[in-house]
Length: 91
Image (cartoon, rainbow, N blue to C red; front, side, top):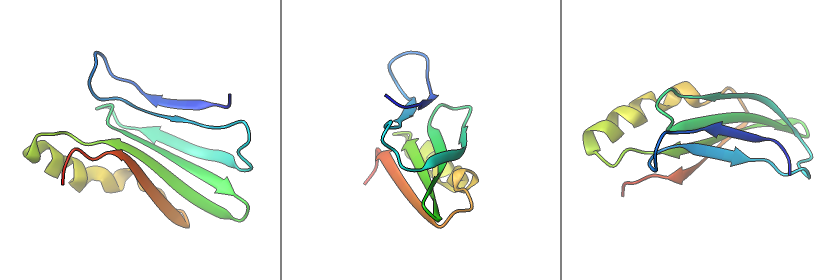
C-alpha cells in the first residue's frame, strides 16, 4: 500500500482521506487539509501534467454548505486539471 493522506475527525462524522496506490506512476507534490476536517487537497504530477485531487465532505446544513462552497477555492491548487469527489450531501 502506498502513502495515505488524512483529514481525520473525532467521532463518526466528517473526515476525509486519500489512499494512494504503490502503482501510481506520478508523485505527490503538495497536500493540504482544512481545520474542519472536511477538505483534503493533493497536487499530483503524472507525466507532464499536474492534477489537483480534492476530497470533500460537505455539511448537510444548507447555510453551512453555502459557506463551505464559498471557501472551497482555497483548496484548488494551481494545476492543469482538478478532480473533485466525495460526499456532496446536497442536490
